[in-house]
Image (cartoon, rainbow, N blue to C red; front, side):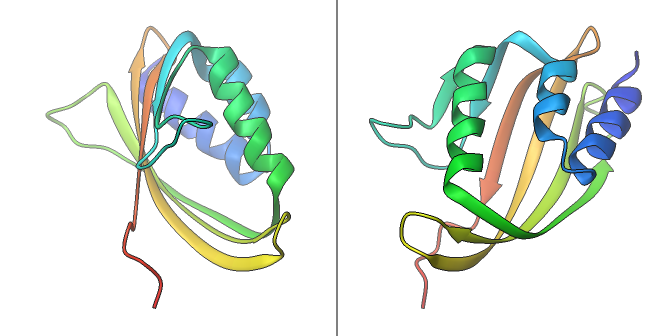
Length: 128
């Protein structure tokens, strides 16, 4: 499976709201996932499919999604094993009821038909 095959199928699953199926199908067991921020409870860098599944389960459990848009995939010829996507969400954070819009870019690295690393970029500027 080529990088483009992985990218196109992963994006199609995400657009259909099948994020868990995308992970189960395309993520390597030893995946590395890096967020722009983290803390002791949820570190910015997580290693292994079970840790990434736990992070995703927390996100799904704590957010009501009103709108999700996935754009891409996009490629960069000098880096043939990578692709990125743009994700945009309108969500409510369930514990507080806070509504917000979120935009982020995910950069994915693929080896042997599996995503081995995902790195997320988003605006870190304080609100207001």
